[in-house]
Every structure is written in C-alpha cells, then in structure tokens.
Length: 302
Image (tube, rainbow, N blue to C red; front, side):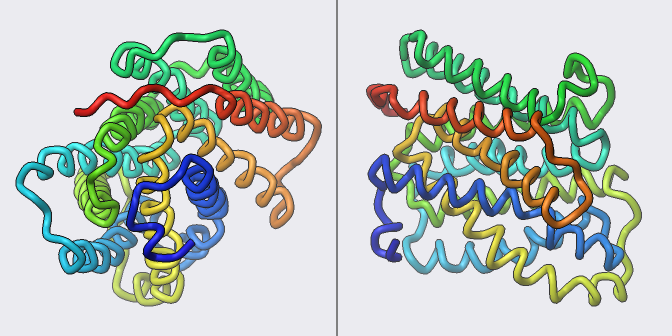
C-alpha cells in the first residue's frame, strides 16, 4: 500500500488486510515487550514510555499534513478517550489479572459491537452474524482451554479488561461513523488518550515501581522500534481499516491477535500448543470468514 492510498478511506478488502496486519503486529507485540520488561521497565510504565515516544512523531505528522478542524475536535477527543483508553486499560489488565481472564473479558467486545450495530446502525441480527459471534467466542474459549470457569470480573484487572472491551466497541463505532476524519489525526488522538490513561493508572500504583534511569536506558534499543515500527503502524492501520469495516468486523478480524500470540509463543517459548489451540484458531478464522460474507450495513453519519 502506498502512502497516498493510506490517506483515503480504503476499500473493504484493503481495510481487511490493514486490520489483519494490525492484529498480526499485536499478536507479536509480547516479544519486544518482554525484552523491555527484562531491562527493568514494568509493563504499564513501558506503555507510558512507548506512547511518550510515539505521540510526538504522529502528532507532528498529523499537524503538518492537515490542521484539525474545529468541527472534528469532539470526535477526535472521543476516539482518544475510548480507543486510546482501551489500549491502556487492556495493557493494565494483563498486569493485574491472569492472561486468560484478560483475553476473555476483553474479547467479549464482539458482543458489545454487535449490540451497538443493531441499536445504533440499525443492522438486523441475522443468523449468519449470530453464528459469527458464537464461533468467535467459542473459538477464543477453545484456545484458552476452557480454563478459569466463567469469565466474571473478580478483581481490578478483570474490570479493566471488561471496560477496555466496552471502550473499544464505542471507539470503533465513532471512527466508523466519521470516515472523513484524517487517519493521522485519529492516530494522534488515540496516542494522546493511551498516554494519559496509562500515566494515570501508573501513577495510581497499578504499574509497579517507577523505573530508574539505568533501566530506561537499557530498554531504549527495544522501546524505539516498539514505539515507531510496531505501535504506530498498529494504531494507524486499525483506525484506517475501521473506516470501511464495521466495529464487529474489525473486532472479529482483530481476534487473529490471539491466534498469532498463542502460536508464536508456542514456537518461541515453552508455551503449550495442542488440539485446543488448533481448534480455537479454526473457529476464530471461521468466525471472521462468516462475518465478512455479511453485506455491509448502511452507514449512518454522526
């Protein structure tokens, strides 16, 4: 894709590829993040530093390309408050609760996006779309091996995971309904929201001890590529893709993150990979395929 092509709302096929690429990045995100942790920077402080590096770059690019219009400021702020906060809350949930509950409670998001599309976009609940939703949730459950019982919130981390899914659903709906918003500006708003909420959560003691200068210095060789080569493209491609894909389609495609994360961890670490994981991946891929067979809904302007 050229930079010129990325500057305009994409076709559905390109948007699908863009969101799938963002999910691929997200699924491999744990690898450099683990290196940052090993350098002595706790997860949530890592999220603060990553956003702190990425935000000036995308903010300058957004301002140089096109100054934000006054009429767009409210929508941009809402994207930052919702999608940016969703990234921050999800990262915090991975620290404060077990990964199983964090994944299950966040990826209930297709249920929230489906409800929003039914009541806000006036999209019918068809059997095909219900089947996609069931396949996705059962596939996620299979990947996680059915562990942990029902994914009910039990602690602060669980609640943050649940809230992050809700914020993601609302934010992707806002972005979908405002396809004319420049993607660079949306990305800058997302980065600002992620930085503000990550910093707030870290200052409240949810991110562990403040890293020292030596730890930050040791982590810089990982922080720079993580922020500029992975985080920024992931944010940008997600917001670019949701211009042409409904929130539910975006979220179902993004569930590929779980498949990529589990399989890469199995290859590169001692994480188990068996029939549960294989069956779950097949179901998640089937859910995305079923959802993409649905005709796109009529777009209703904000």
